[in-house]
Image 1 (cartoon, rainbow, N blue to C red):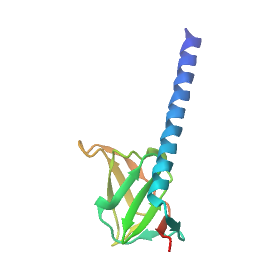
Image 2 (image 1 turned 90 degrees about the vertical axis):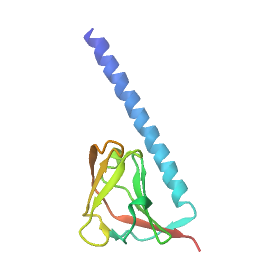
Image 3 (image 1 turned 135 degrees about the horizontal axis):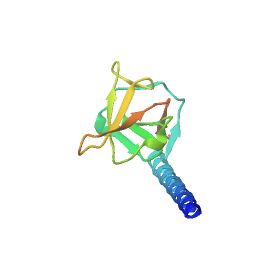
Length: 129
């Protein structure tokens, strides 16, 4: 019995791991689609003022902010926690969102807390000339 349980747990872990990899691949594909035809600029610490409606969460991959035709990509330290079905609440200490600001995710229907996101530098992507 013990060996069967260990095998089942091991098989479950492999399945979960494969599913996580598939989600990351899907997220990477979606991100590539959003920045297609754009060129990456130098990473920046903060992004200009933005509207929460312009934030896109890409599951297990990145947060994407659009402002004035520029797409800013942030791959948080804990990007594996991102779920595209979550909503984002930001707590900024000024008029810009910076990597040191607090970003909380929550389930939009119930308002249940789902986590905090540790932002990194933002990479701006502008249309190629």
